[in-house]
Amino acid sequence: MRKFRWLEAGLLLWLAGGFAGRCFAQNGQSPLSIMPEQQSGITALAEMIQQELKKEKCEGLPCQVLVSNFTLSTGETCSACILLSDSLAKALVPLPHAPIVVGRDSFASFMDKERIPAHYLDRQEALVWITRELRATRLVFGTLVPKGDSLQLKARVLKHENFGNSTETSKEIRIEIPVGNLGGGFVPREFYHALPKRDASNYDAEATDPSSFQRQGITPPRCGNMPNPEYTDGARAVKLSGTLIIEAIVTKQGTLEEARISRGLPYGLNQNSLRTLKNWKCEPATKNGIPLAMVVPIEVTFRLDY
Image (cartoon, rainbow, N blue to C red):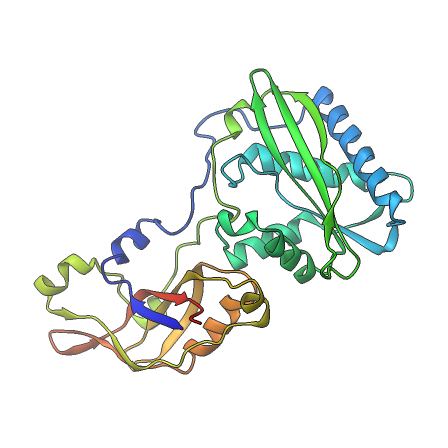
């Protein structure tokens, strides 16, 4: 079953960035950087990962490795986590017989596009899906544990050529490095960044506080014909239930334009939902009886009923 509703009560929260995830700003702190003694530890970690890959003859073009963000114990990532993951990916590239390393910019762009909350990425099936989507055959993932003046990095390799039922992970590899100047970079944040501010001026659209609707004579948009997006095979296989949020402009003509994911779900459910919204038929918002274009968030809930 799929359920939809306008988030009228949540619109103000969205405008304030409530669905964008937590992002970390330095706020005047020194920029984070990797010190030489930290880099030597990361290089050692890369060499141990390379040994795991060599055990299964994973090298060269057939073996494409994706390095995911390190995470905190909460499952969220952090600025230091991302910097260390970038450094690990770079350290893998020059090793003898190294695999092809998928660019970290591709991973970052994918996560910003899909906007999947961190708690879904704790599931191995979701990691497999991300790896497939980025056309990799191996995934390096792990956690970062601050321990006083040091950091413990724990990493595993998710490995299986076809990612079938026998998908497995390597043994856990651990190293410790000094904190250095990374200490300000452990604030939890989601894998994705805040959405850029939308320019809806072409539609003369308003983003209005729902609590002021009655005072301003505004009637929110209504959609009477809302076809359901279908489950994907991947989502059905893992029995995924969850809610995604789409932000769209409901124009004065009642069409939905420039829909984009504010908070997403894995396994292609974002794309299914965006395609389906193109077929919705709506009545526009009105202000004192006059049609009004409006930026609105839309909640789509997926739940399998047996």
